[in-house]
Image 1 (cartoon, rainbow, N blue to C red):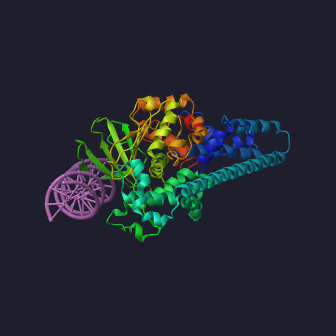
Image 2 (image 1 turned 120 degrees about the vertical axis):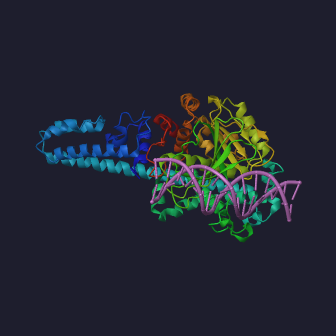
Length: 516
DNA sequence: CGAATTTGACCAGCGC
DNA sequence: GCGCTGGTCAAATTCG
């Protein structure tokens, strides 16, 4: 919104580090980001997008000064004000000085040539990025198709009305998760995955979505798309909305998904963690077994936004704030809110896809695999069936060595399967990957991902931040989702370090490191 | 005065 | 059918 190019700029900048870029790359709009020497380490939440815009304006002003000189303005003194600390600008200034004795028209044509090269370079980068995104989406769609053929020999409709087909879930969730609807919905989700992928490009008629698709990664997009359906329909239980038909009455692709909830546990003294969204409290209840009331909030950033969240303090440890998100936003989000939304969407998508796929043995096997590996910071995946909805919990209350735990709480008995997941080290690539729990994905297939784990410095940085500041939760989400959702929507122009009020911002290095 | 919050009532789902 | 519980509504209240 404020700066539609910001995300893209960040992407390019992060890659320009490793390459010998032509000066043109540095001179592009990247001024706004690279010219701010304090930007990388800027931890001020007041550094809003407006500030970036102001900086852009200032640089534009400088550029205009330069153009004045290029036009042969007699006031050559403006050359001395051009130095913004940018190499290219300096080089240009130096070049101008060197060309002072030459014809201004020659200088102008030279600048035009450079501009042309810049545009050409930008165009190439855009096309490369677009191509990568498309390839990723295609590969993911193919993978889902392959998994479908592997695990869904029956056609979708047959599967939906076949209660006996719930054995997959039963393996995971034990006998208590024989919920037929859950199985149906999950099955539909899985069957729709490929369709979701393809629809990523079917929505190009939406101007805004077209922008988003330019650089969107398929995984989070698919997750959000799926959850879009889930949220908009699952929350349709409201009296104000039309009741969805039963599974048997609807075509497979129209069957609403089972609600997936994403719960975030974080230590915080504040009554509510800041996630960048605007919420309105609409109810409060005393929940059974917890002396602390549960507060109900709905998103008020757009009329009809289906997203709800529940906030409650943990009965065992009242310092722990449990925030449960449900649904997906139907409107553009500010960077901070996008971060959280991406994270919860990715987690929910992973839950939905994973709950249908993994077997107990698979979890155990994978646990054995990972626990036998030398991956530090292993955590656990918890399966339970007490919840009416499959719930995934991002536990940020643990010690720094277990900065983030992943608990899957579908239904039942509270059985715990050891599934080491080091979200910070193994990377949100896995955390947000719907296939992470797929038992038929050989461990070897995950190795490349695991090998991409960031250095310990990243881990330590995040972990230390979490340990030192409970409000870091939202910022961590921003960092995670900045990786999961790279690149994100055009209005997400804060390098993934959304301006979360009261929350410290992640060093840019985190995002840059993980992206590469 | 409008927006946000509080709080009791209401409804639906579920288990007995 | 009844009671319990979770979730939502909406009038009343509070706040800025």
